[in-house]
Image 1 (cartoon, rainbow, N blue to C red):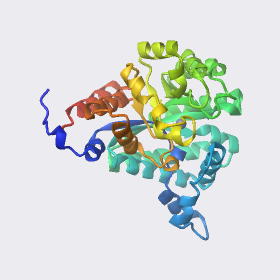
Image 2: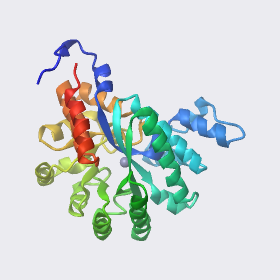
Image 3: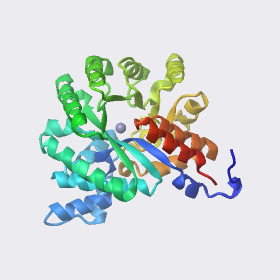
Image 4: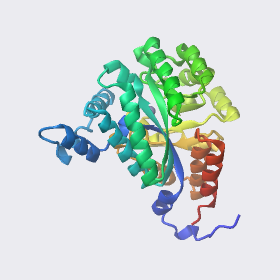
Length: 344
Ligand SMILES: [Zn+2]
């Protein structure tokens, strides 16, 4: 294929920014930046937060305090309009990183459990934010309805049933997933729910192997997950790695997230390069960017610099992200073509 070949002089950051890519593991509530928090505070609070104060909400020292900080940010969402704002702002922030398509988790599990807002009104609002953002920034967006596994099967069943209903109403609702504490909500318990969701036409994702061992990834594979979120500990099990290679099950890796939460003890211990070299279907993602201090472009830069992925390998990772997406085949092909044609 003919491509301009001034690869030696290319500025990696500029090139990676322009590389068309998809983000497949991003939580809407985890995408709220300090700047957006200020915007919401101006709308909702008598004495609005300053940017300095907003930034402090994101500080944490360990995993429990990270969860507290995440909660503190989400508690600042007071209305469906706030959800519309964070969706729109998220798409704007993705566009400047060269993200062309995103599949984003919304925690309907949390919405139901804490009963603070009406789920239908929130979904209508994020759909408004999506439509406006897609139009203005050219980033397409599909929703993955996320349940909280440790809230129990009954709560998750409610969420999945709602997801099936929403899918019929909104074509952008594409799939379901389970997040939360893997240890207290093992994936195998969700076998039936996953089968029902599949029968309803929903695509299946599952957080697995982030904070517990490879057995969690096995369970996710066995209940039919089409994509695995994190899969960090899969590296500990050769047989599992073999199955993931053979079936080419896409992995939604989140390198910086794993380091910041302490799930991975050191950057050099992260299996991203090993997975790639062994032929696993690897994608890079950002999870909860403002909490971890790294957006998707930062993840691409990190992997390029610290794990010595060549730019052509980075292109392969971008192509993987499109390939592993739940986009319709014709859209997928068009975007893959753009990734392939992107020059130096
Ligand atoms: Zn996640």
